[in-house]
Amino acid sequence: MTAMTVSTAISLGRVQLAHIRFRTLNTARQRLLWVAILFALVAALAIGRIAWLGSSDRTATATSLEEALLPPRGEITDRNGVPLARAFPAYALWFNPRAMGESGSALVKSPQEVAHALKQIFPDIDEKAMAERLASGKPGYLRRRVLPEDANKVMDIGELALEMPRETDRHYPQGRLAAHVLGYVDSDGHGKLGMEQVLDDRLSDPATRGQPVSLSIDLRVQGALEDELRKGMLSTNAEGAAGIVLDADTGEVLALASLPEFDPNRVEPGDLVLTPQEAKNGYFPKAFNRVTNQVYELGSTFKPITIAAAIDAGVVRDFGKRYDASPVQMGRFTIKDSHAMGATLNVPETLIHSSNTVSARIADELGGEKLRGTLIDLGMNQRPYIELTGRGFPIWPGKDWPRLRTMTVGFGHGIAVTPLHLASAYAALVNGGIWRPATLYKLDPDQVPRGRRVFKASTSSRMRQLLRMIALDGTGRSANAPGFRVGGKTGSAEKPGSHGYRHHTLVSTFAAAFPMDRPRYVVVAMLDEPKGTVASSFQRTAAFNAAPVVGRLVPRIGPVLGVRPDATRDIDLSDLRPLVPHGGSGE
Image 1: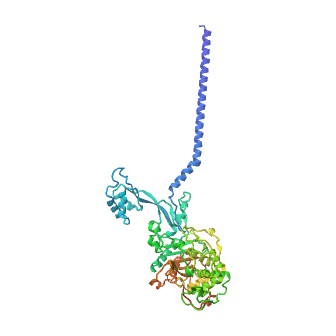
Image 2: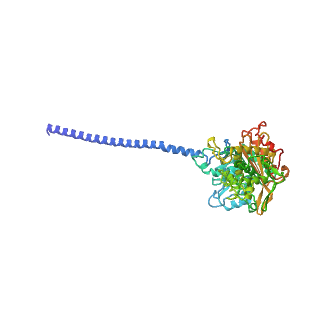
Image 3: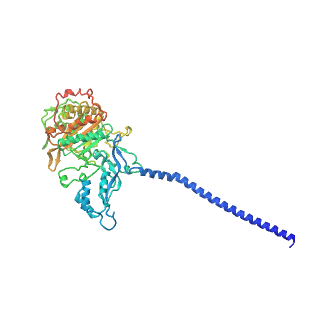
């Protein structure tokens, strides 16, 4: 092989080697480019994922965490932030018959022995029924709301089948106080009765349950009202009692009580449903709200409403005018007073003496259409206006009122409404003539409803004078708390029965407002079937039982509500005083 040939071969080899290197380098570069592109795509996806998580998942996670930290049901407070209902961790007693396996006995000891041991921890249980339950082998709750110390005692029994799971329970730290306002929560976690039922969705919604709901109730006023009603009920052996304290200008309910009450922490079946014999005797279950549900004739507390309607219509102009006070004969019916009050009476004397006959004559002169219209404007032809679901429908006389019906309604008979109807009506009587619906929500000043005008402002001014005179000189004297300028009217009505009115059973009511020189609050107290006792001077009428309840209550709640006693102030009665030379009595 010549030197040229060798040189040529070497040159060709070098060219081939360079070509191979170029292809290899090009392939490497392409692969590196694809790897870079792949990494870029992965990085872009990662950045996109991080951005998406930052804008969506983090919020969802935070919300989930926030929801997890929230109680399962929102809190209810009074108007000052005092807790009325809240959720708290508790133990429950659960029977798990399979705790020791599928086969064999559920209990180490006999059901009777275990039931006896549980009876030592929980004295209120039925030992025989508990033993039968354990023997049945049916799993389920044996008890809710178990205290930690009692849970430890249950564990000491040594039965694996008795489990103590931790739960969140509804607790009412004030016990029975305001039970009819609050209601309760059933075993399924849903509100029943009261504001628990009204607010069920709001209290359970994660979006709103973190914010407590403030009611209009003032716990201090509520406690005083229940205490005085209970004293009045027990001292007169009454079947029940009811009362309400209402802001005359806003319609806010400061206190609402119905006795006997139930315990929302431990609601018993007997609190909700009566036995057949109890129902036959006309009793109400403890859960029955007498303020919003009990419909009855309000008796003489209607007389100021009749007089106000007559003043507004121009039927009563001269307060010195004398009216015939003799019995009113209408066919076979006779309207008469409880005792002789004189041959004639003027308007102030009519209210002070509580005359049925003159009230009936004024109502007759006013006419059924105008009296009926006034009562409709006061909402007495419909269920009472409030958020609660349990509201009684009035016994309304119908569309056309004959003369006798108009006369009887004029002094509080022939029509039946609730104490809440009466409280709202008295607010309109004294606040300048404006009716507003009652509410259990705390209102800001800009939330107060405008209401509707029922009486002229001048009429309301006159009614404040007349109601004050009743407390000074008439049937409301025992409600005249010194310095608080109370005004109000008594009412005692016989309860109806299967054969007409039951003459020995009364519903006694006192409707009041204070202070009458600038009315701020309305108070209504009612006693159901009070008896004549030593405490009531052996009398059953409202002047001797319901009125004293208000007389004791107002000095307790006045200072709390910003109304302090002042003996130097009072409403001006100088133009009416000469018309009533002597005080009076009556019903």
